[in-house]
Amino acid sequence: MLSLKSLLISIIFFGWFYPAFSQQVQLLTVDKLNERLEQGRDTTYVINFWATWCAPCIKELPYFEKLQQEKSSEKLRVLLVSVDFKSQLEKRVIPFVARHDLKNETFLLDERDQQVYIDRINKDWSGAIPATLFVKGGKKRFVEKEFTYNQLLSEYNNFK
Image 1 (cartoon, rainbow, N blue to C red):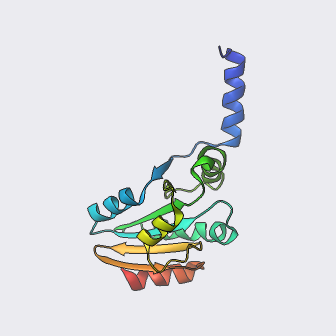
Image 2: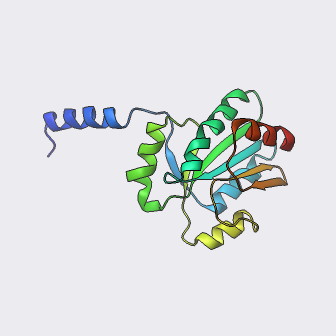
């Protein structure tokens, strides 16, 4: 049984290490991603594939946050999809999202076979990250590189 003292210590400890943030990290399959994209055919989706251990990914994450914020009046949804192992959700991904105060919808890809999901997302994807998929209706563009903010903004403006 958890004592009141233990409960308070836990709240203080976890509140300090994992500050409150408004969004959760959800598990996502490629099928669920495709359903989401199909339902929002009038929306431009910018889906960034990243991982907590990928330095270039971490460097560009603020650019995706800024894009969503600056284009909030447009039909744009930025989705951040971590390719960390599912076993890392609680230990690494959730604390990372909280520490970096990510506001965009964030997911952990819940797929077992890396080569299968890579091919389903884009047949030309080598599997390297960061990688970004732009989608609107039936139109898609896949970019396998690290972006600066200006490059991301340009890519978005040229795509939509």
